[in-house]
Length: 288
Ligand code: PAF
Image (cartoon, rainbow, N blue to C red; front, top):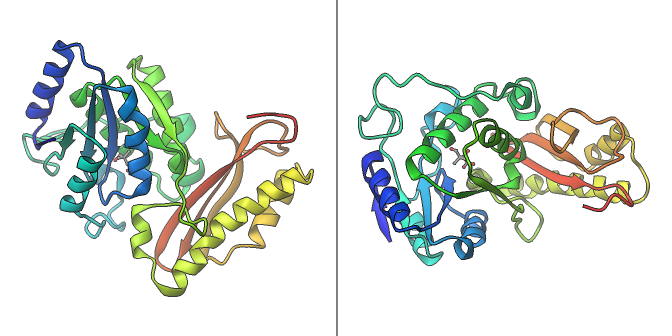
């Protein structure tokens, strides 16, 4: 396994792979890797000849008041995980402003997918976030030159936006969505779970409990979105609810009645930690 830390070195490695006719798979991450990231590597590994994992805490997707400076970092642990999962390359670009990195001095361009971003779900409280994500993912795709890339379904809005960007810009990259990986008690795995201590860790499970309760009510025949939302709310033990919505799985527009496969999505603060989660809502007879 190689560790590459400049855009030029990554581009060279990618050009060599491509010249040899090798298929490149890519898992972009912000590091502090967990079972969810491992599952994405395992998803791609058998389908590609070379597996690249990037580790980069992207400043563009953090607002000034957010946790960029304290975002958990563990480069050594991350390298060990990548090695265990059979990655060929770890790409760790230097910080923004470094001339050898993703955002050299003077970098200005942003990628924005308005219909799936502005005012929808996480963008309500994090209006800068998806522009930052789309911009870094576009840059990473350019540099890594991948044929396939995997993203977790936990960040369902992110996955939807990236699929749209890749289609709109005809990037020719297969985007694979990896199922949410959960702790034994149902909490969706996230690097930010490291912030949860004591009773907050226990209360955090209430997000997945609420979403599961919605699935249960739907299976019992409740299809009204407002009623389903009330079912979930009854389970929540959070400090502030950012949103709890039932949305169309493709357009992310709010749904009033679950008549075809939809998505229930939640974001909430537990203590000082913002958590997100989502589940598919598949009405009886709709299949998946
Ligand atoms: O999901 C993440 O970890 C990040 O948003 C991503 C896709 C690596 C972009 O920084």
